[in-house]
Structures are given as C-alpha cells and as structure tokens.
Image 1: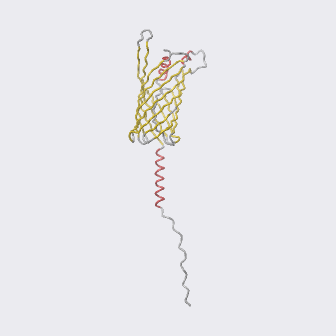
Image 2 (image 1 turned 180 degrees about the horizontal axis):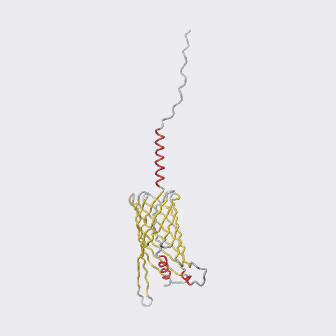
Length: 268
C-alpha cells in the first residue's frame, strides 16, 4: 500500500510518465538528423485487494500529455545513431544510442539503450531503459514496428541532506516491462508513427517489503522531420554533372606526324 504513495506522487507531481518506445529499428544515415514530437494519452489502472474481505477494487483514469515530447537524433555511422528526448510534461530528459545489429531486404532489428533523469518537484529519479525493436517493411512507404522493453528508475528525495525532511521516505524503485506495436508511414523527409503500448509497473519504497503494481496503456503518435538528405541529393546531382562533362570532353590530340621521306637520289 505504501508503494501507491510513490505512484501517486509521480503522477500528481509531473502529470504523466515518459512514453515508452517511439523508435523504428531503422537508423539514420551518417550526417542525417531528425527532429520530432510525440503526442500521447495514457490510461493508468491499478487494483487493490481488501485483506479482510478479499474483494478487489480496480481504479482507472486517462491522462493526456498536453505538452508533446521533443526528440532529436543524428546518424553517426552505419547502423548507429544517437540522440534523446525532452519531456516538459513529465519533467524528464533522456539520452539514447540506437544500434541496428541486423538488416535484410525488409527486416531490421535494433536495440536502443537509454539513460534518463526525471525531477518530480520533491523527489528525483535516474533511470535505465533497454528496448529491443523490430521493423518490417510492408511497402515502400509503410513499415510495421514492434518492440519489447524494460526499465528501472531509482527515486530519491531531492533534499536528501536534510535529515528532518520527512519526504525522504518517498525514495524507492520503479521497475517496468512492456511491449509496443505500431506503423511507420514515411516519405523522403517526413514520417508519422502511430503506436499503442502496454506497460506493467511495480513500485517499491525503500525499507518497505510491500510493492504496488499498476498497468499503463499508452496511445501515442510520433511525427518527425529528417534533414541532411537534400545535401546528399545535391552531391549526387553534382557528381552526375561532372561525369557527363567528362564524357563530352573531346580526347586530347595525338602526337604530331613525323617528317616525310626525303627526295629520291638522282640516278647515276
């Protein structure tokens, strides 16, 4: 039951948790960058059981993320990109590294480990997240994406040095596991990625053997713009023009002909 205090404090202090997976398993090419926004609405559900009667009560509510998360990523090398996101509504930031370890004609597999920091006004948390992502190309402009992920976040009192502060008892750990499915509709420079994900959270306060669990269903839409492709297209056009110019240049003239034969000798 005390674990529910940590859950209630997180939701009331920030308005929402950060959304889960918004990635595709595809990675940006080297030099390309992408900026995006994630809009979401989250349904929180928890169940409590009365120890005296054994009756279970389930409560749920839906909380929209009014302020979208802002994301930015850049391609660093083949199959590797780095970036992160800022969630003003959840008072959190996260940095991640995505590595695509498998690629075929249509199938892409990647992992995107991340580290995050969240300020809950009176408590703060540092978290680790590890998603595994699958993307399958259904058509030229449509991909299916699925993901499984797990995370752990350690929360502590912001003013831990003040021993008289009773809010220090709200320190604890929040562990989650979940999965997500969605689609990626994309053009040359713009993409929109609707998805739905289910996450199971378990919260435990420090020094307390009890834990509180709750379920989250998150419906999100991620939109993104990719830059850097225009320069590559101009470079390709310039190389083609140079190649055509080289083909149309006439070959250099050959060596000048040598002197002709001299006059014939007069007969004797």
